Image (cartoon, rainbow over all chains, first blue to last red; front, side, top):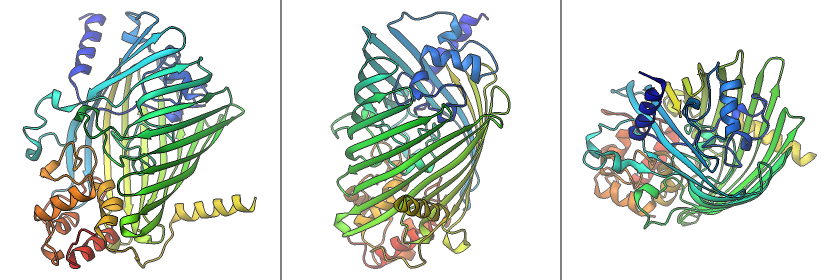
Length: 392
Length: 121
């Protein structure tokens, strides 16, 4: 079987598998030698389809070898067209206590196809479509409603963008997340889940900004998909309308500090978020330190009550040899800062192995403590996941 | 500089844990739905409007109230007989939510709301 046949089979598999989430690796900023997320991604804030530069980096710097180009370099699309795909298969062991724990499951997590069409030097159209993955697809309570792939089709991202170049001003409009926070691929991290950036929370957004060599600024207005839109274009989660600002200053090609703010109003609550993001690359030990802290003020007018929340992430990613990334993280979410029992604390360990361009193996472990850790405040939880990732 | 230092101290305290043992949150459905149920339960593959796993949609206050009360997951005045409390405590079945357990503080405020008659307040 030739390489072309293998690639065609991989492409076909991408079309029929399941899944859906943006692929962003903030751990690669500075550690891979690139300083801006927009160097490797078409999105000025990172995530999604990678550029030819990003594809070269994946083969030459991140993976242990291979050709990161589309179809492994067998065929190059014309300059006005960029194509790609992501497929992730996962197996988990999940233990939250109870008579049926632990739970074991293997499932297709993601399949996304990407296309970017350029119209001249400055205008482009970005389209993403995929099939929504599910940890428990055999659940009889959803039988009949999600029996076919067509029932699970989703498009999380589609937007039109004007951009002066890899640096400079840009404006884009369509469906995507407003730039904010550490944009991890792992949607389970508290800084994604509890700030409005969980799986399929993408909003319709107008975003503009400027990306310079040492700094960038993104300002966005967003609103959820209208209720009349079909499920394939719907969002879940907070479904807020509002705005977000993210400003990042990079220092000496080895560190970044960002300040951010977000306001959102739904039919039930008004949320104000403010926080900071930091990254520091330490070259001799080849360690990237990452952190994010957000304070959230949530007002529920119908209950005449407001509460203050905290979401935080502190992690370190170690790159001992080319093709290997080992990370550890501490996570914290407190639903109401005045009640200690509403806290959740997560400890994460993760190994990402990139044996060859286009392939990734992920091992992830997470241990969560509910409340202050006292047995009377709730159970602990653990998750182990093995994930196979292929991108075209 | 003083403001910055105060912010750093508050952040460290928040990251390490703070707050008291007393819960003064009002046991009202509008608060419970917006701050506990929707973020924890109405995720895309569970009780969102798209998936409605188990036939239960909890994506907003009115829909969630209708499904829990009319679906007999909540028996007003009787938290001990309400399936929603048993599910969150993993009593006899898979724990809900199946990925991030509810804190005892959150289960207690939901039980208080049920004890008060589970009004749509």
